[in-house]
Amino acid sequence: MDIEALRLLLIVAETGSFSRAAERCFISQSAVSQRIQAMEQEFGQKLVERGKGRPGARFTEAGLLLTERSRDLVARADALRREMAEVGKTISGSLRVGTVYSIGLHALTPALTRYLTKYPQVNLHLEYLRTDKIYESLSSGAIDCGIVACPHEKPLIEVVPLGEEDMILIARPGHPLAAWEHVPVSKLQGIPFIAFEEDIPTRPLIDSFLQSEGVTVDIMQAFDNIETIKQAAQIGLGVAIVPESTVRREIADNLLIGRYFAEGALRRPTGILVHRGRPRRRTLDRFITALMGEEETGSDILIDPK
Image 1 (cartoon, helix red, strand yellow):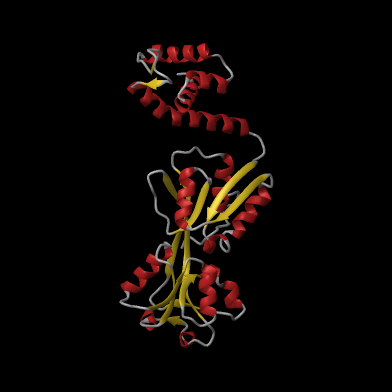
Image 2: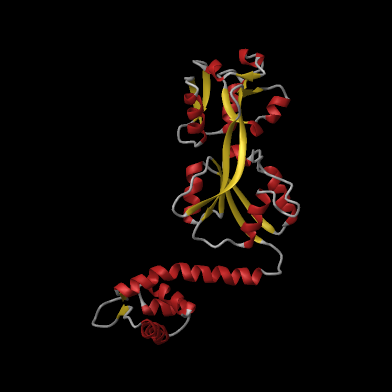
């Protein structure tokens, strides 16, 4: 099977014309026709209807099937060529990563520092997006991977488990709940509460936790941004439940108090999203390794897998 002939077939399908495919590939139209004919002989199937006054290239059922199946083969062949060319060479190139604020602004920083220190020739583009946009961007190829909370797989998206984050209750200093070293969840009944917006994956996690304890809070406002939630808690609009890593500085500066729950830890899973059908470049593989803390000693971990 000739990969370059399959590539040419895809170009004919894309342009809808032998002549335009020839122009793009800088070869003659007859050369395009001969390559297609050679494939037809190899497979024993007519792939493209020709002549009879019809404009453009008309693919047969066999031709449509071959073009559909060939896209992945050609993409994998191209990826293999790149990988072979990279063997023994410096890890370089661009890497596009999408993440949410609550992970990217806090837990991700140590891993990014390790990665860029080890591979300074990589041009890393970090973009902060809502979770649904990360899935969309990964599916379309706009980013190489995503890092999200409460990840879930989709037909073309695979989840690489990254770890878990402790979730804690936060409130302004002097709040009545500050008297508790570990706050009983029942103490949140009817209390003013600052929530994540409903389409943020962390929201169902918190809602489920409260419901399991039979607690109903009074949601004053809901935001999609962790920084806004923290600010609302600081000025006393209500309490909130957030990842512990996102409020360490505010707790140290006595801008917020943080408390675990008496009933036990509430943890938020995190994961790396990668495209299931897209071959991984070494740049991405090394990035995933750095995030998981497995390089060299394996002692550094981005998020505690408790």
